[in-house]
Length: 147
Image 1 (cartoon, rainbow, N blue to C red):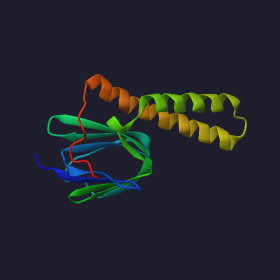
Image 2 (cartoon, helix red, strand yellow; image 1 turned 30 degrees about the vertical axis):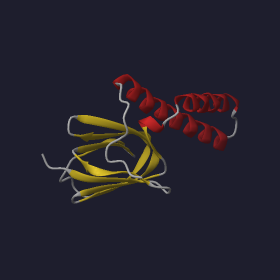
Image 3 (spheres, rainbow, N blue to C red; image 1 turned 90 degrees about the vertical axis):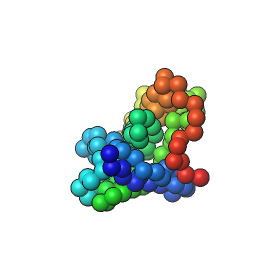
Image 4 (cartoon, helix red, strand yellow; image 1 turned 30 degrees about the horizontal axis):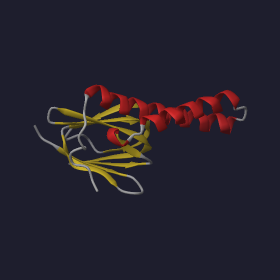
């Protein structure tokens, strides 16, 4: 089966760089699956779960939004934030979720409500990715990860 190069980059670092079989990303209009030989595409990403398929394994990451570009033989994701499952501190993510839920209860201004909703969405994605990894029993570092 053909592969496609995937690069995931944040402002701080290259988070992932490897040849993969498939990527499923949280696009602006819903889940977006990309296989080798996909048509060129540029889209925004919503905060959500990014799934990377390589061989018989799936890797999950929490993405905080950004952009995805599909080129003839390469996918480039410019992410606001990107965390591998093993990097997510579940205790911190649960605390962030609780803070966001509290802000939602107390918020009266539209801007505060929007920010609290976005914070809650980010913390829920981080928890989902971390808990998925825990259920699967994965313990090692992500293959193909950058520095």
